[in-house]
Length: 275
Ligand code: C2E
Ligand code: CA
Ligand code: CA
Ligand code: CA
Image (tube, rainbow, N blue to C red):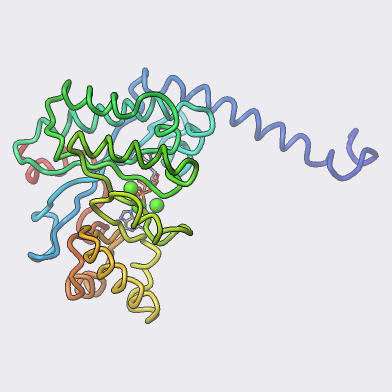
């Protein structure tokens, strides 16, 4: 009612207020989510392509965070991770995720790898290297079974600090993966500068395999490039037998995607990890 005379902007005010209130509430709820046991990890298998790539040849799992809100139900990580990042909560949450993933993997009879996603804020706040070190000691997970997935966004802010952190993490014996490769801007220079063990080819390129020849050319080139740098290559978002066949043919080391197995509670993969 007070609206129009103050110009068009006021028309949107109530809606914006609502959005800000929603955000604030969601943020408060997220801050107690860990304590309330609402966060959990799903695990998605990665399978070697050398053998026939089915989940039964899993070489490792990526841990993916899930938030089961008591009223809203399932909130996808694409929604709550950015919220946790912008509020700084990600540091505490990231610590919980890392500890939980290491604790889980340490309980497996099979010595498979576990990959954990790191946010930029975890690089810039606190003592990440000290944290990883103490969680490994605490859980008894051997360092070579832990893989840390980072996007180039993590390294863009402060090159020297990023490089020093990655070197110190590697000195602990953990592996480092470059996640979402190809989705950013400075990927090639980052590959040369930073000591990655693995490249994860972004799902966007995998989706277009078989649809356009450019994607096939890019995927082929990334596999060769990565191998030339002595890195192993994982393709993300593999959904079809055709994609898998192409990737296997081109020498991609491992695949991850719905074709192999969806992210699920680890109980669903009990047979693979050996309980
Ligand atoms: P991401 O690290 O690139 O994870 C892969 C995403 O692709 C996951 O989405 C996974 O469920 C989805 N995916 C896997 N295979 C397929 C497929 O064959 N087809 C399709 N359409 N999708 C597939 P999810 O679990 O929703 O996670 C989304 C993003 O949220 C992740 O992307 C990651 O950036 C972030 N995230 C998830 N868990 C964590 C976490 O514990 N910490 C941090 N910092 N970020 C996380
Ligand atoms: Ca990832
Ligand atoms: Ca990814
Ligand atoms: Ca992604």
